[in-house]
Length: 285
Image (cartoon, rainbow, N blue to C red; front, side, top):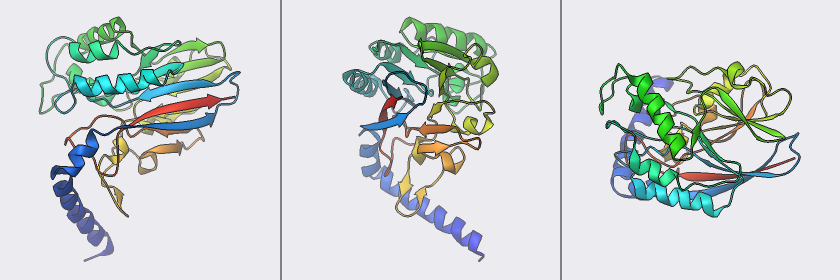
């Protein structure tokens, strides 16, 4: 057995053991035990500090209900941030019409500079762009995407698709479409930002390595930190470059970013050594 084969065998065996662990109850408990991660980072060019609450990968659907979303919203509001950002994968939702229960909870989010989000790949599945085990592809998925965007706006969440907003005189927020399923265009997203400080909101951290323009800081989700991690091994699988698994990262061109472990779950209603997190980020001049 070659070294590579042994490693694959070990990873598979550990994966089976981890599956037994998480399904045995401990992992289920961890999946619904979120915490607030507090970080501080300098963003040169800011004129005054700014606090951002970052929630991502809610995955409202089979494993995540309105009660979980309500707790996250309450925690975000309790921190009294200046700005609230939502990093995509809002839902695994395949019914007709908008996800009313989710939107009712998100409508309670409140921040002086607004509430903004971007789409993730699971949102595109929910639109019906492609078939999944939960729902068929839809010929009208683009119309459904716009219907969802309007419903989110009605709930107070502005979803950015390759757009930007001047959230403060000294800061432009940039939001891009999903790296896997959307049509992200950073040039379009940054149009009109000039030399202002920029904060990039994008779902998939792999997008950071495609950046060819100066960006102050990126906020991403998508990976769930691996969702199931093992001692000495780390994440069994990561749906991105492993350097982007979680926490502070840096892209090929030097753009710094933070990859959140997210709040929800997919695949299994379980986590291991990878608790859900709500990021409270203080940006300083």
